[in-house]
Length: 440
Image 1 (tube, helix red, strand yellow):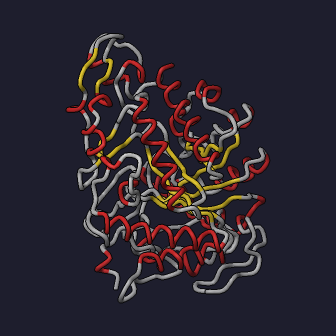
Image 2 (cartoon, one colour):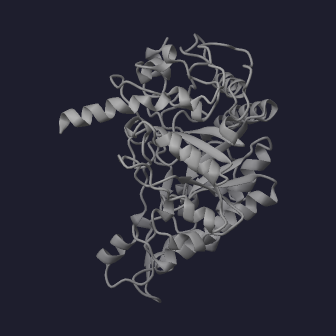
Image 3 (cartoon, helix red, strand yellow):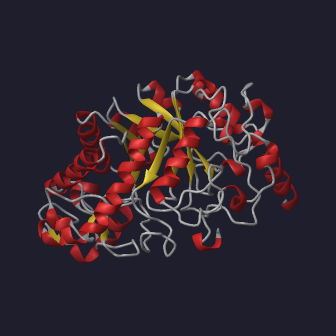
């Protein structure tokens, strides 16, 4: 059994095969110049990568800058990253506002597990009670995001941010006790849920699982979207993951329940109330961004394998979906994207480049699986493909060999065996796990 497993994992190295290059030129280790043929690969109109780490406020190292400079500049490193994207045929990037690296974060230690970092960059003009960081600190952060988004616009690389929902600064929630006064178990039975809210960020500035169905919270979230794009007009839009963290146990969010234990379990289960809540959020989110001329992107993570969600979620929104829920199979991929297409949804494909979560990490996928996924998606009219660096789920270790299938996302990037094959993740992207102090 173990021998078969080793053979299977070894075979997965075939992911970066010549068949994926489709005749495109091979990327050299350090070009610095625009490479011929850097058009969008495989007929996709949108190709890019979403990073859990680094955020806007962490060092972005990679083939564009393998080691940390003596006097690193966050904005300049991200500009180099964007230049590399543009040179290699990628036209969007998704960067978290919320720092993730813990003690190694250059602007100060923090780890926001769900990417929600509006308090790092917003003035909260409509809701000043949400302010929780020093004004000068916020202004310096604004300057970084402004430089990066403007450079992306100028280079033709759309810069998105991403976050999970539903979060809010403690200062905002504490100032509005009505937000945590919830109907619990049955209609008309109210409780104060303030003491139930958790903080998972290192600085303990954010509450998680805030109730979307509270009108004041909806106003607050809308104001965050609006202020973000007002402050950073060059930003392309936002990618959101509704449903995580969306674990409110009130009657509006999960329906009536017989007891507290049943409610606790139900927050992770499907229900008509949950579908209605998330669908309303998506509708509000999309309208807010569309009204500002920005692109809303929504991960369809919440739907899982339950096709009942497909008809509930609003049309006219671009959904970014895992092609299948579990791709670690010998029998080829399970095409969960097809029902979404048949229902008339606009879809982009999302596939993990690394990580061991259930999106099907490419390093553990049968060798021909992603070729087949790409071919199937093209035949279905899929126009966008998003790679994911998933640092939340055991990103990769220094000991692991790493085969980075970037040729699916860029026709010219990282396709040279001498550059990639058999090298550790620390060799290719040394900043993602390492302490920046070790990289000089």
